[in-house]
Length: 204
Image (spheres, rainbow, N blue to C red):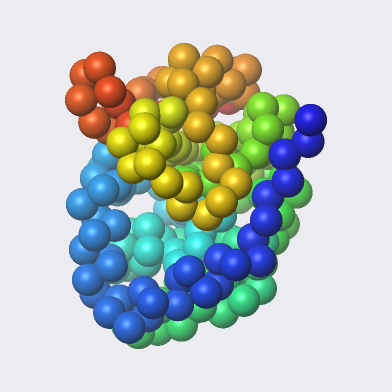
């Protein structure tokens, strides 16, 4: 069964963030401390790519805190790209925003030091998740992915964008291991009810 990823309604979902951009930046910072720590402290690369960037809050936060870096946000939806650029402008941050496909990134091999995503991979079937991770590992030696587990749905009782797949942390670890080598793993939530994980993966 092929799992399609519908992005047609994303732009409308991100528009409310433009009304109070600093509040939403602060919320994103609170919920993404682990990947942001890795990006800014553990991986001192000169260039960073956020794939499936949506509003590009992660990319904006990094650029604000480390303005000397090249920071790029990429999304497949042109309307979302426009909103991301506007969001960055409203926060006084200058990032690059590109339109492109995570399965065929418009960048050269090793163009970036690290690629990251938050809430992207759960929208795809297993084979596409592995393919997306391997394509990210082509343009950067390290990839950081934050994804929800099946406990996220149990706790929230709703779907965020309508086509997420809620799979277990064991399934996520299997997929990430198929894509590359896991060098770091952290869980979000309680010890027995992790609602999300952040995985740092490198090439084999």
